[in-house]
Image 1 (cartoon, protein in one colour):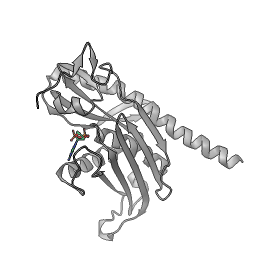
Image 2: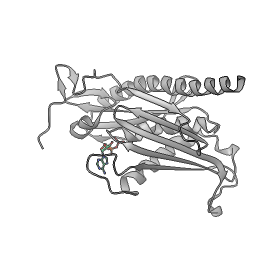
Image 3: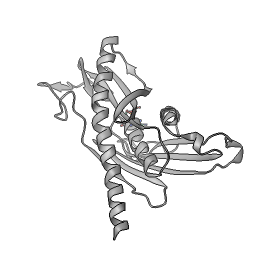
Image 4: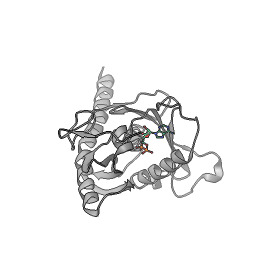
Length: 245
Ligand code: ADP
């Protein structure tokens, strides 16, 4: 199929400016059986994250006597994409699970939970590019909801090069037809971006464009971070109100 024009009159196909995020919705504590959970929408992406633990690890030989073992499972529902996706893990979801776990591990205070396990499940109910970033945002909130001690929060967003422009939070058409896609996750501590926890890229960008992209991703991440915080605060305010009654 021929590549469509992705930028028309200085606007993107969905009407956004280059530096604009898709609408985001975050809801905390949506699953009763999980220790922590989050439902998150980022544009047309719809994600559920569930956290179980800290709890005993099975099988036992996987236990670590000095710290908690973190497991992260990213899964795309068969109905999440236009053409039905074959159910179950594939190379892509195994890779996304691995890099996402590695992004979260440094923020979790694993040493506080020796021999235990923390399981993070993220399910993509609807996908529209940027699912790994949306899942990380949801997983971070669900971890906090579960009461897991954290050194900060992980906030993630992608940037892309589209018709020669660096844009924030690409949607499917931009991801598919654009020149490059660069998902980033940041560790945010005390309201400041402290470090990069994940950085991937496919396609081609100059070194300067990558620098510009990371700068833009930082701006986007701070906006997402605010929404993550607000969602968590809202839930705790509600809990307190309930206790007062
Ligand atoms: P991300 O979702 O993190 O951007 P990719 O760049 O691999 O990851 O995928 C981009 C988008 O392509 C996904 O969000 C989804 O909309 C679509 N996609 C990925 N895998 C499949 C698949 N197996 N079948 C159909 N669409 C897919």
